[in-house]
Image 1 (cartoon, helix red, strand yellow):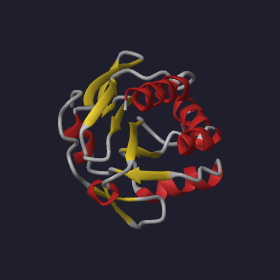
Image 2 (spheres, one colour):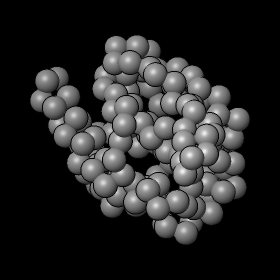
Image 3 (spheres, one colour):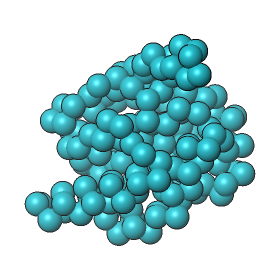
Image 4 (cartoon, rainbow, N blue to C red):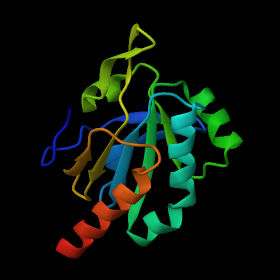
Length: 157
């Protein structure tokens, strides 16, 4: 998994509208890049709706939030529309970005083993450096945890 102090791997993925988003195109902005396992599942919906509901807090902290899942962008679009998610969600269908960030891992559920995206969040500064990593995120406390980190980073600046 990418660690604090490392350069965030650049990438380009389609957003929920099919438009390409390149991380390096957001240079100069603080990015909250969060990875989630699958659209329209209970935990992922809780997390995404939490981000939606806290968007003013993220904007006040000067951060742009981007969610990434290993779903095709058409599924991401349906998810965004269904829950009025008005922030950038990206589809990493070939999971190359998940792999680059070290969140593509073997998982187990109900005794079945499979590969998927781990829920993790990376805070990236305006120069593209990872300044904080939350390797295991709880959907219910995600926003509180990330906003606290952003507040601490702002106070230290």
